[in-house]
Length: 189
Image (tube, rainbow, N blue to C red):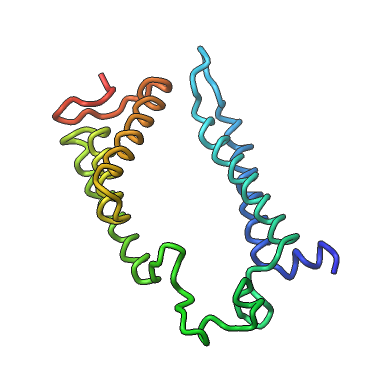
């Protein structure tokens, strides 16, 4: 089967190829607004060019890999992989085929997603009170401890590093004003 026929028969490759084209369009459109402005500062087109370019490269790579690589599903609808090579079906062996590598079921993953949405909304509402950096650090800490069930010390380190990176990149390097809230712990002003 030639490559064009494999692309046509592989819906996954087609979807990723379309996303790659959308990424290219976003990158091209972002250049219209200017990637950099006077003084070498980041312009309004920087983020669309960066995000569109990354999307185009990554989705293009995944599309090519899905065309030339091993398919994720067999034509009969069964999953391909180590169980398929053994000739056993996951449902026959009693395993739940909806469990991810962390041992979470589909229901747990959806519940965790809703937790993260709720926590994010809470953090956005807290920005005006405690400031962006404190709200972001708290959000990362709570997600790490409550949703991901990491140890407290590990979660605190993750939150501190993430907050430091956000402050360094946006506050110091890009000079983006980060709201300080009532506590005044931000970069605006």
